[in-house]
Length: 311
Image (cartoon, rainbow, N blue to C red; front, side):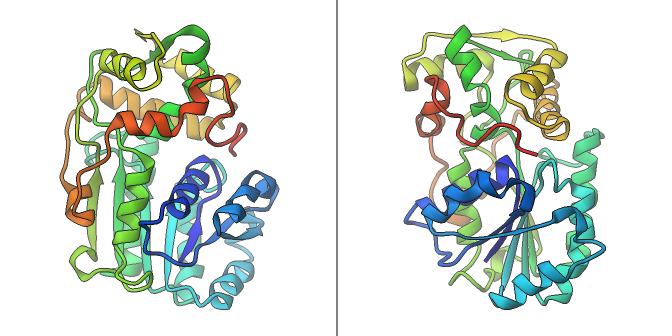
């Protein structure tokens, strides 16, 4: 499997895919942007093969990407967006992937949980989803992921220092999903690491955790899981964006991905749970407490689970 996902979600996804013994995918080639190769070096320690290319040049010079796909005889590709690989750019690399005869494609989409939100980033993902379905027809699967532990772990330093979750959630609720569950679903889509399970071909799956949280329950769970006595403070989205871009050094596009999701929570549009994780893996999603403990270093003054300046 080739994993095309430079950036914080690509790094976290590959890390979690490879470090858990339950995954079915034996070989993972992580394609990252050459400018940020050093930030992904640790993926080799988990068993990934790392290939760095000039992502911005792919549409005009796709030979590097086609060479990698053919060299490794890739059967399946997973696409994740990032500051460098925003949805419009991902649309432009679909044709080179198709020419290289990639048979199966999985898109990790941040399009929210339905198609009626009308926000900028969400709309970009809806358009990308349609292009994936057009190019791969039945040999695709869209995994829509709402608020997840990586979205929340970037606030770990703030929770550690201020003992506060300062988010623009209002009184809205959401069902946070752990990145391990996202990677587990992806691996279970394939019977032997190559052929996509027919049951899920051409489907759009919506991945959530099993329990609904509001900001106050988020603080309570943080105390239970990590022993941090903190509280939830509702703030303006501009404060959240400023924190993400200046304190965590996310790019503007990735920061907007996070704040848009929180806007949807605030509006009550992510207050739902689904059974799709259980449908694919035949087990319930992991508890959010487990997810917090998995990213505990970010909440205890240590290194973020990924890295700053994720572009």
